Length: 177
Image 1: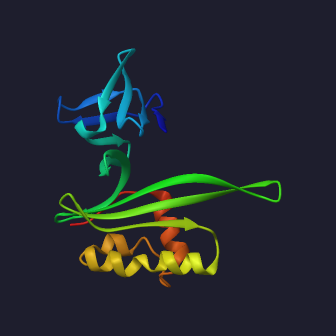
Image 2: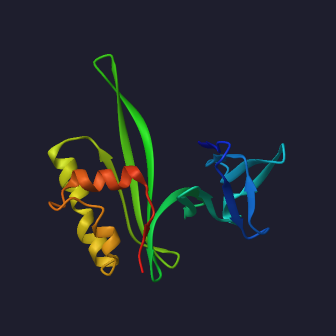
Image 3: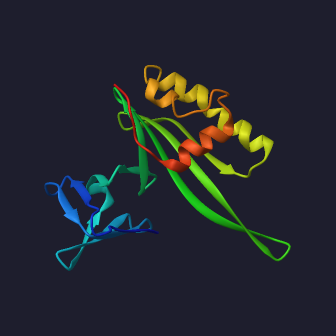
């Protein structure tokens, strides 16, 4: 479940197919029901994620993506021509030897129009194998966003897996021309 509350100076803007852009103070996403519950003018409202075009929170843009019958919100990292690079980060916990070991899971999608041309899930395990998997995303980024120098400036010169993980963790929007 995703919960977001804006600070005093922050704004959350929702773009929807059912009504023009509107600002909310906070929202919560129920992925099981594929709906968003938001507070506007001290009243609570519900909106289906299928009716949401995007949610803008300061410099982050969240867009719904349909997976099976459900919708999930993803961070829009970059967009060029008809392609979008999206990421969704979730945190899980493994129990080993009586200790909790938190880990991050990433789902990376490249959308062309509304079709996923690339979709893969990765777990940040801080192992060499995990780093190689993340580094393997660079050729995918290069194939789908070749004319986006702003994207390439996000990575260290060695183009290693750690710089890819850092980019995905920041979820900063990169503007391509």
